[in-house]
Length: 561
Ligand SMILES: NC(=O)c1ccc[n+]([C@@H]2O[C@H](COP(=O)([O-])OP(=O)(O)OC[C@H]3O[C@@H](n4cnc5c(N)ncnc54)[C@H](O)[C@@H]3O)[C@@H](O)[C@H]2O)c1
Ligand SMILES: O=c1ccn([C@@H]2O[C@H](COP(=O)(O)OP(=O)(O)O[C@H]3O[C@H](CO)[C@@H](O)[C@H](O)[C@H]3O)[C@@H](O)[C@H]2O)c(=O)[nH]1
Image (cartoon, rainbow, N blue to C red; front, side, top):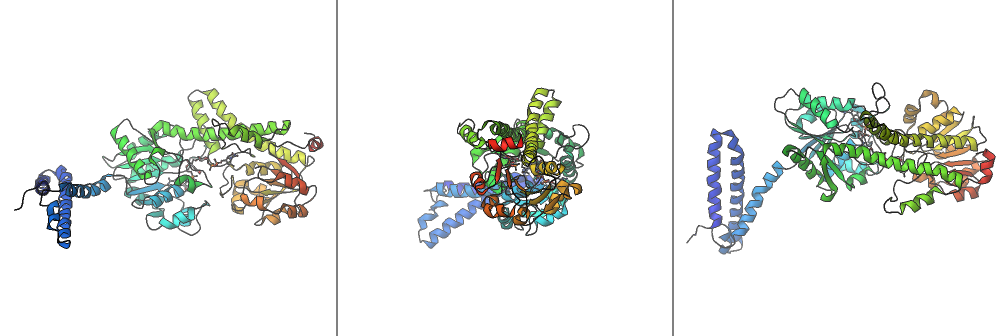
């Protein structure tokens, strides 16, 4: 005899609930959601029932039908059918399946490629106004050089990663929009030379407002001044022609460093998500973005904060990192005067767990598109709040960086008998750091200008920076004194001195004995990155100047330092 069991009852219940909610939804459309849920529930229970019956027939074990019709083991039936019910609901209600990113630059390209790689269920579209850049992203010759990036892009492009100039279509389709446009320092007007220029951000926000026809989560990926989200919200709300569209703004600053972007994105120290966590919508938006990252980032590394803390954390992180470099660079100057060795000092202080060993390499100066701009921006915000002393503290970090570049040029000139007029100075490296072709704010620009002012002829080699880029950075006038070479040997032949501007690993592997042979004597090396084997170079016959290293008293007196 067939007993009515819990399982059978649940089947009937689902059937009844679905019929009722479906009928109600014809009268009240708001009940459609419940009808949908009960439909899924019914469907999954039917699937479970069929599977149980089928298995019992195959195994000739009528007792296995008990999952549906008999009293024992109803838990199995319940568990399976619940999972089947909840799974599609989970997929529908959780995170996004379509995101877009405005800005296909050093941040937008790699970060979106990583999301596409780690979240195959999400369709990612990266848009930019710059057709050339988008064409490059769609080609075998990506617009930026970053170790490991080619492989990631190749794995997803055309599957769930797309690059396009059709901003409107991408904005309309996306549930979540990352904004990763450039936020450079203002060149003119109020706050020029300090404040962040939010022109590109505002224009992206206006486009989002104009083209959005459904609710969107807007994610600040660009580095922006604290409280930018407030301004952006106003732009979005006041410019959206569509009634009822809601925008939730999140701050999700990017901490990747160029040259190690793929490693940084694969295993970030932390992912920071700021939102209006004081209300439900903000919390839900934060949770949805957390879920995207949770596909590959350990949960304990995903931090949530309020919007303003997240925005300010990004500026503060960069300011603190740059401040460490300026601090050790300041000490490098003192080392040269006192006979201390900055590498030994860095090593010793880095062993203190409160200080740590990273970002303590003395250099010719920090470069890159971020540090200077973000410190200036931070200092300007302090000024605007009447905190002049705080602003001055941060300005001094940039001041020390400028001093280090000037000091380097002075050292070259004074060491070479106070004149470098018409001397060929080989400049190895132009990028602001190794493993990138990026030259934004590279210290090489200021050093080259300084040496040209003193009449030098610069012979430049960088493994990743093309001549057109150098031309754009230096200007036509300076290029009259610069020759770019595609082989280091050509740059070094007949040179009077070598200056190391970027810490490319290949420079360490050169045959420095052979180089010495083809250079004018005395042959000088000025190591602006402290990467070469200085003892070996001195043994070959070079006169070596390294940052923060004791200077030979004989050389010191010869140059009158
Ligand atoms: N470069 C880095 O390593 C790094 C790291 C962390 C954070 N950031 C921050 O991320 C932001 C972007 O930096 P980046 O280096 O990727 O800049 P980028 O200049 O390489 O790229 C920005 C892109 O945005 C595009 N763009 C500008 N306005 C647009 C618009 N309205 N619509 C569509 N496209 C538009 C530009 O054409 C450009 O290609 C900046 O705020 C920067 O401070 C940069
Ligand atoms: O001990 C050190 C470390 C770095 N540098 C120089 O500092 C500059 C910046 O280097 P790095 O920070 O490694 O590169 P960025 O790509 O500029 O990355 C910084 O700026 C990004 C943009 O905001 C942030 O996301 C990163 O976290 C932050 O490290 C370069 O010129 C380096 O050569 C030194 O001189 N000494």
